[in-house]
Every structure is written in C-alpha cells, then in structure tokens.
Image (tube, rainbow, N blue to C red; front, top):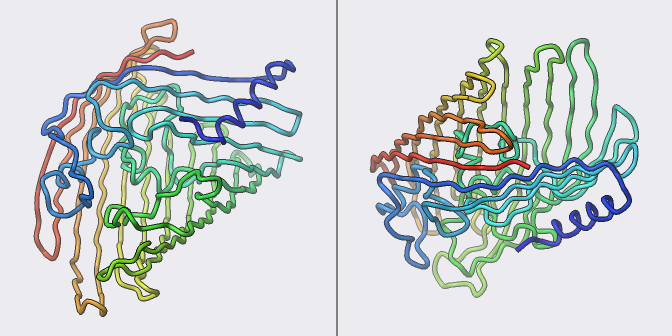
Length: 398
C-alpha cells in the first residue's frame, strides 16, 4: 500500500500531465528467481530476536537475498520500480521514486519538491535521500540484482541510511574541470508515519512492546564530479538521535533507551579505461546505546565495497564485486553488573559476479552469483558459516 507521500506526488504528476508540463519517467517491472544454499528453511518463531546464536541468525548474517526482507521471502518474486521527474516551472521540479519488492515492501524512496532559485543554490523538501550511500535501485543500467553494498541489500541496514522526510539545502560550484555540490539536511523519519520502526542496529534486540518516541537525523555531504572524465567522489556524514521506552514497562531489562549513531561515508566512481569502471565505498558507524541515560552498549561497524564493471559490448555488461562488513560491540551494564569488551562480533564478506544482457525493446536479463562467508559470536565465541546464491532476473524497461 502506497503512503500519503506517494499519492501526493502521483497526484502532482497527473496534474502536470493534464497541463502539458514536461515529465520524464522510467518504469521497470520484472521477476527475480533465486537458488540459495543453504536456504532459509523457515521464518523465525514470533518474538525471536536477531543475533541470538541460532542457525537462523547465522544465515541472516550472510546477508544473502533470503536473509532480511520486509515481505516474506519467496524464491521467485516480482518487483516494480517507478522514477518520475516533472518540471513545474523553470526553477521548480518534483521527483518521485517508489518501489515494490520483497526487500523493502511497497516503499517510497523519494517524493520531494526541488526549488533552485539560481544555478548555485537550491532547496529540497519532502522525502529526500540522505546522500550517504550510492545504492542504484533506480539506475537503468545497474549490473546487479542484489548490490555488493550491504546497506543496499538488507532491509534493516537499508532503513538506516536510505531516506526520510526532511529538508535539504544544496549549492553547486564549478571549480575548473570539477563541479562541486554541497548538501546539508535535517530529517524526521517518523513524520507522517513514514518510518516508525527504525532504531539503528539494535532493532532486532527490542521486544514488540518497545515504542520509539523520536528519531532525528542530520547530514552533510560533498560531491565532486570531474566534467571531462565523469569521475565522482562523495564524502558524507550523518548523525542519528533516537529514543524510546517500553509500554508497558517489564520488571527486568525494560529500561528506556536512547541511540546515537555517527555515520561517515566516502565513495569513488571512476573509469580505469573507456569500458572498465571502478567503484569503491567505505562506511564507518559509531553507535552508542544508552539505557536510562547511562551508556551501556557501544558498536563499531565498518563496511567496504569494491566493484569492477566491464562494458563488454553495447548489449552486455559483466561485473565483479566484493564487500566486507564488520560489527564489534562492547557492553558495560552496571545495572546488571555485566561487562563484556567482546560482547558481539561479526565479520561478513561476499564475492559477486554478474552478467547483464539487453535483448532489445526494453527487455533485459541479469544473471548473478554470490558467495558469502561470516563469523559471528557472543563473549568470545565464534560461529562460522558460508552460503551461495544464484539468481536470474528478467526485466522490462518502459
């Protein structure tokens, strides 16, 4: 079901069409089929918390396509993408990007109005992207079914740094052969019930009666584009401040919680040769979890992604990807008289290969293989695991 954000922008697009305004839209639809070993044998029982040392959670930490989805996973599933831009006036543009797939469910990723009173300054308001990742959900030439970046292919992680209602101010500056854009943003994910359940990396450890009271984010990003070669560099940061409490409050371990996350991001996209493209990104997250205003849990999370994309022919593209994601969590809980410097550890890495072929008249296919390994554990214990996924996508672009 579409949110009010989508209906608002769709209504704007309909009005623009009726008045003959300039509209650019891309519509994609398709079906994905995955074969995964080991597969997810069954969903977790109600109330099961992630990362509790079970075989199910070992598989979740592989971040394969069946590991963490909004809708119940199905090996064969349809998907839809819509990206639309409408020029309302010479300096005002509306943008809508929405999807329906099992990873994110029916989700609005962008629904905003962009006002640029000059070539050097602009404002966006509505559902806006944080600009702290390079997910290519709406890229018409992406070679991937499931991207190497874990923050683009797992529901809980995508929610952290995807988008939210907010306001952004940006500037555009030309520096010789470079164009620089700076972006500052303020966000309220819970506004108009856009996202009411995101609570950083800790949502899996919360009981169903935990109520999130506030979620506030700010971000800053700088993008450099070399106008001659197309090389891009992005540097960004985001801070999240979240808080909530149990209602009703249980007798044990039911303390109010506050979560602070600082996210730092850098990404590079460049051509090594005319047909060979390299992309690299790195993220660092520092998460601090307070129980009744006392710092208890500290997470240090790191993510890296590397891709080589080769334009083999005008109709064919092949890609090689690698990613690594680490979590190191420490606990110092004076209330429970418990301390563990190595409370939780996760080291996850993936190798991916894909081949995309354009069949003509909008029809395309993607074949992807992924091999993932992980090691996780609590209080010094370690549980290794590995898995493979082979997927085939048939899609149509309109």
